[in-house]
Amino acid sequence: TAAAGWAPLVLGEAIVPREEAGASGRAAPALRAAGIALVLLVVFGALLRSADPIFASLVALPDVDIGTVASHIIFAGFFAWLVSGWARAALDARPAPPIPSVPSLTLGTLEVTTALGALNALFALYVLTQLGWFFGGEHFLQARTGLTAAEYARQGFFQVVLVVLLVVPLLLATRAMLAPDRALARRHTALSLPLLGLLGAIIVSAASRMRLYVHYYGLTTDRVYPMAFMAWLAIVLGWLAWTVLRDRGERFVMGAIGSGVAVLLLLNLAAPDAIVARVNIARAADATRGGSTRLDLLYLARLSGEAAPLAVASVLAPPRTAPGTLAHAEAELERCDAIEVLARRWGPESATAATYREPGAWRRWNAGEAAALRVVAENASALRTARHDACRGRAEQAARTTTGRTS
View 1 (spheres, rainbow, N blue to C red):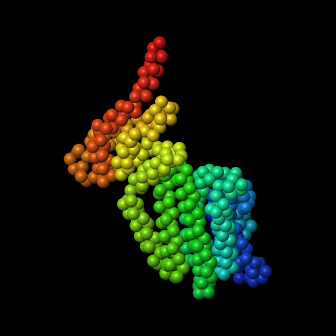
View 2: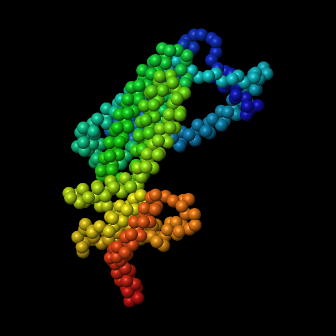
View 3: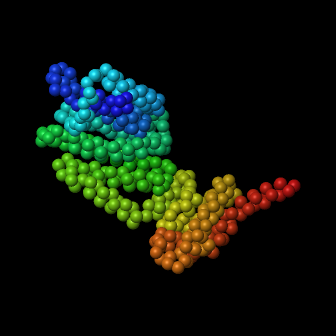
């Protein structure tokens, strides 16, 4: 009784609306609309505050320890569950009625207007804060947040991705829960379209921040795939506007899946690792003419086979540092490590090469791996010479260490 008695109490006497009319009945829709809007503002506001320090300086939320709140809710909820079931059985002498079915949740004009209107206002405020750094540059950032452009670019992208990702099921759910009313559907569309437009502006802002991040820190595959995912989300938002908001929701799921498959195919054809290598090589070449950005040869060597030709060309290129300097010694040690990684992964004695020599190896043929094996084999002599020259410093250092220990 204690374990199951909460069900008729909650479902039969709390969730299921009563027939009585009055002030409490009239206030219920307003309270529900306010509750929905408050939850949405707290969730999305917290994500946007963590994404952007400029927005965080304008919007204040209570400093809540989520772990403490969750533990208190679980602890109090467990005992409330037991006590409510026991108390209802103890105080109500009537036999327990059958558990009623949970009524379907429908949203009216007030709930839709309040929830989506609040999100529009929140996203509009966030977009306005982005205009400051977009047009004001680093001077504005330092005056407002004390951060440099490089420090500012390092944060917030993934929170923005999560915001966009959460809005899609939110719009789908609210559309599905609308009361059967054409005017209400038009109201939902009228509030959803500007919301999608603001999300598009947020996506552009996130892409600009990622571009700024790549400018300062270079490109990695961990930065390519989130950008591709964000591009797919932009397609999904456009498809949602074209289908769901025009009452053609039955086409939405298939179109979203199809666009995702298309993006994956394009990524496969584009070879993200090769793109990363080209961007970083071009960035380092530009920096050598007027800056000090260093090409990470070891990271290039660890990319997939599509990037191996570019990695081999980079490790065989003449060093750009002055001989005899500390920077030159560090660059040579990194080049030594990069050549060893290339030989271990794609050399004639590598596990990949051995696999391709096995009978039936054509079944696992991969274009990137085949290109990497070919380019390393063609440049084997040059790579051995470069490895000998680059690793000489490490060998000399090891010899000095051994001599010192012997002495």
